[in-house]
Length: 529
Ligand code: HEM
Image (cartoon, rainbow, N blue to C red; front, side, top):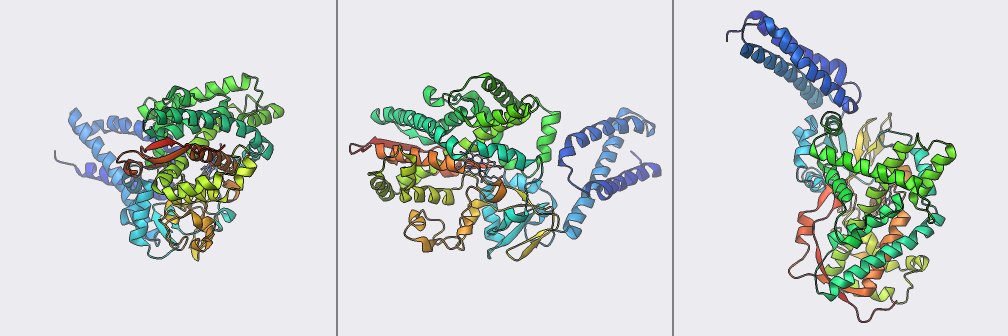
């Protein structure tokens, strides 16, 4: 098809439009929340262009070719401009990192396609950062391989809502009085878990702890969110809503660098399987919250405090979106963190029988049902701390934004309004943080404190205004379950199991999702209550 001069002019003009739309529009501010609108506008413009190209040549084939050429020229103009800008003019261009990562976040998405972001970052760190304090560039965000003492002093989370007001309400649900009341339920479910494991132990069957600990933590959090468990310990199978939730979470790992893709998917393709799963799960949670609001509860749960705050303000109906969201947060934040920590603790116990024996003997004279007394067992706390340090349940997540004036971290100036993240998995493996950083050495928290080179590296619950509101609940819960099971059972690897699948199938989906781990639980004959 011979192109006319005006045809070529069209193509050129459209390419210039692409460049201009970058330089005049997209270069300013954040656009990911507008992604669905932009997607719609471009989807409408394409057929308009097709109709407008009616006067070019004849035949539908020519119209298609012409439209496709114009769209491609626009895209080439837009993306060339973006590439040149990000490569040569962008304020973060001097930070180290792979070339392609500096151009597009899709590079990171591709690298994370197996859901192992923590390994992607660890590899980058090995390649680019012999020195501590390295900053890795990833298009518009930075990964800081540094201890961040001031991270929460100046930085904020990307502002989506009035966090501090919501946090004040949350805090009431985690007061000392409230926590005492919750412990009764933790004990009930932990005993149910122990009795289920006892049956498997007596039948000489393996215990896949990567199922059982999840069933336990989700059942407990179901109680705290909806005053009703998922009954997974009872039924010995995954509840459909939890399965949907975990499927949706699996996208969080690879797609968290590009929230605009999720925005488009939710608005444009709500029927797509994973988006549909998420919506179905949210609607299930909404219905449970409706039941919870109407229910008369004699034992306060976490939702009790949230519902009470809205009722007192007379804004129960208006706050329904918050309450539904809070319920999902309780469930994810409370289960998907405690469960992997328990899985890894029991992996380490099977891996280090000497530590297991030491823990058993440290617990001998302690009434584990008295959580204040249990807290005094320093070796138990050390085991949990060492597990949290070596296998952080939030391995890379926890994004922050630098203040508009920027901030200096470990001598490196980071410009303002930049998304930053300090990945715990890699932080924990820095020799500048710990001696023998990749070894499980619980004594570093008791008798060998010189093995902690820089305590600022230990931030499993984050720090500052955005730290974990459920830290004390989590620690109480983990202390009790571990103590109960270690007092009752001796734990070993099952058959040839050595944790191979646990690590090879470990996924980073904001929280860590470990692979399968089969353990042998042998009922102790020397159990002391
Ligand atoms: C091993 C256990 C746990 C660990 C390691 C952990 C870790 C964390 C971390 C790192 C954050 C900050 C995330 C960020 O920076 O964006 C966080 C926030 C949070 N956690 Fe936990 N968590 C645990 C257990 C729990 C439990 C049991 C609950 C109770 C429901 C809970 C509720 C929350 C909530 C509501 C937030 C958001 C706080 C805010 O934005 O103000 N967590 N957690």
